Amino acid sequence: MNVRKLLVLFLLAVALTSGGPLHGGDGSYNVLFIISDDLTSTALSCYGNQVCRTPNIDALAAKGTRFTRTYCQGTYCGPSRASFMSGYYPHATGVLGYKNPRPQIGDRAMWSQHFKNNGYYSARVSKIFHMGVPGGIQAVSDGRNHDGGNGADDAASWTERFNSLGPEWMAPGDGETLEGNPDGKRPVVGGNTFVVVEADGDDLVHSDGMTAAKAVELIEKHQAERFFLAVGFVRPHVPFVAPRPYFKPFLPYSKMMLPEKMVGDWDDIPKPGINYKTSLNMKMDERRQKKAVGGYYASVAFVDAQVGKVLAALERTGLEDETIVIFTSDHGYHLGEHDFWAKVSLRDESSLVPLIIRVPGKKPAVCNSLTELLDLYPTVARLCGLDVPDRLQGKNISKMLDDPSHRVREAAFSVAPMRKGFLLREDQWAYIQYKEDASGGVELFDTNSDPKQYTNLAENPKYAQVVRRFKEDLAAKMKDVRTNDLGIRYSSANASK
Image (cartoon, rainbow, N blue to C red; front, side, top):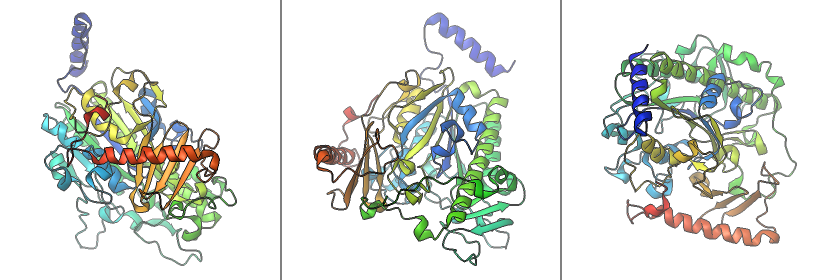
């Protein structure tokens, strides 16, 4: 029997006879944090998708707690990642774009740094803080230096860090630019552009294949010590590039289903609420829209396979019973809902994220309570027996792992700085406001009767009192967010310990 498993059995026997916990305040769990880029939960079969199968992520969900109502704090990469890594809301640090929050938080420990400071080996593989995709990870063999750089990464947060370069849109294979290419003459291009490439070669040709291989190597190398390993996959962020086999389940693209469209859907939406990418401004006809969905799903299937490799390494090394595993995304993604594409919007498709947390010894569960990505830092620190800094603006949700009905929030909060937008998401209501004085407009949706958020009730006199209450709540939330130890002392009474 594996020596580590014998040790666990011994500790369990001690715990049972003493009445104490198996894992106490000695940092006795590893942490494996896996994050996918631009992943909507609705693309995962464990969240109900019937077309895109994700067996490895599903298997993790079957062993852990699957959260159905977790919201990001920024609906694009930069502010979201800076937020959950630093422990502060975007408007607390002022990091509303693609910068690292280190200048704002000073010597306060980031999430992974907190573990590093407590004796953990802390490593990043690929994108955890913001990193440009595809440009930041592109590598071509033309003799030039394409090291990609570290983006907005934070060196102090890691013992070691590793970048995974790949060919991205330049991968050999069959490629097509879907966006702004109605006559089909535009070449395959880079940037934040909808491109599909059915690529030649195997998984290791691509950044995410290399990321999985490096993560496996690090698990095997550091299995004798405690580690905080953050593994960042860049798909399904555009370009939708994956080896050919991952596309097969979605061919022909014509069989892909698009979300229902409602005539006049945008008529009651304030101008800032119209997403920056739409079928109209991207000039994507129905064929291209369906191919975009198929390419996205192929990218998700590719990520799922890489997740499986990393999880298999945990099991192979005997570390599965000693490691907390988290799987999530930095924000959601529109796949044609409301005729919107990509992120930035504050609708559920863009602000809601998948979140799975597996803790050894905890029973599988599904939790429908409202949570935020900001809650990961205090929760995982507490689960590992580390001190939880009072300054953190997230909440400890560890009780939900034993009692999925437990609640710590009445509303989740997210922002879209590019739109000057703010979201307060309650059980029933989704309230979206543009500009702090609401001069950019307001949206209100009753998600009980209108779960897909088609009918904006904000101008309906019947709901004037609800809108008034949300305006007051948002003003109070913003005051609370900005009242923190970066300037004014943040009240720890707002954080669940």
